[in-house]
Image (cartoon, rainbow, N blue to C red):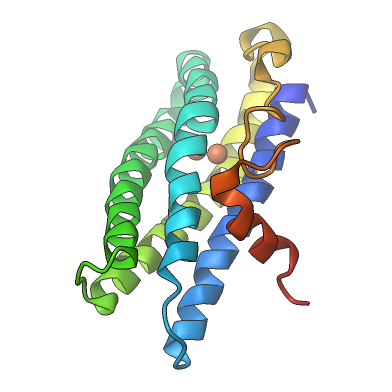
Length: 182
Ligand SMILES: [Fe+2]
Ligand SMILES: [Fe+2]
């Protein structure tokens, strides 16, 4: 497995952790708990910012190369690229709603719940598609020189949640993640 492929898979595990946090919050509220809009807002903030800047653009470079050399993959790649756009739009909408409620604007929970659940489900399904279909196909068909340089992909310093230094705005979410299940 080349380094870029490994990195994308590692990031998928991190993104799935955030999806699990969202899903756990939905279950907790369904069972009578109060929505934690600050936590949900932090989660959506990360999901909107980090993958949009560092993860999806790299995938799109790889997938667009794959579409050129393997026409049979084009439909799958078009779907994945479209899902990136949907995740971006939906994610920004939910993120804005969570922040608005956290700052006391009124917004019906049921509306936010529906969009959060849709976002979590789509992100989970999208990652499964990439892990099970698109990335293995890219690894099989794309020569190493067609993958983005791994030296330009070091992300430990740039990831504000899972990197070497946790950014101030993500400390609350970070502690929630490491204390899950304890
Ligand atoms: Fe993706
Ligand atoms: Fe991905």
